Image (cartoon, rainbow, N blue to C red):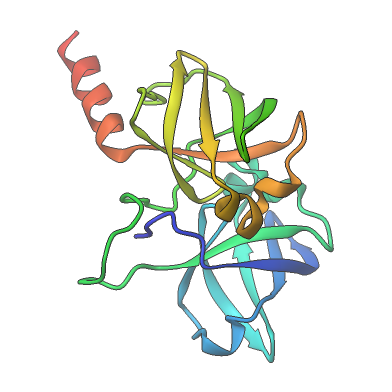
Length: 196
């Protein structure tokens, strides 16, 4: 379980295919603090640490993860958002994030306004893929509040701190991001579906 508060950024050092799996080597200042078998969210995707080498560590993504997220498009040198799993009993500054990406979205508009930014995203509608104004959404692992909501799109407001300390400063029109919809909203949508 995660909070959606990005801890640091990592840089992709290497990528190695093995069957349907992709081994991803990440350089990060948190690497020396990690343990084998520890969970770390990468652009919002929960992956298990399988190797540690100094200031780098390796995780493995299975084919389903590569198909449902933007991790399959990673290249050496790419930057990823990182967050270690939350500690039970600590503050929950974001919202409950599982690290299970539901789908991807494309950045369709970026507006700078009085020192902040509004990012607009569009996605393929799916069951449980619900956003509501003032509700929670996770974009590349970042816990955010929805500004505007439509059946297949939404926008979020990004403050300067978030812009500088996450991948948001690298987004352009067409950038593909990972989405995790609010888990409570997904359960409510499922219950309503079962009632029909």
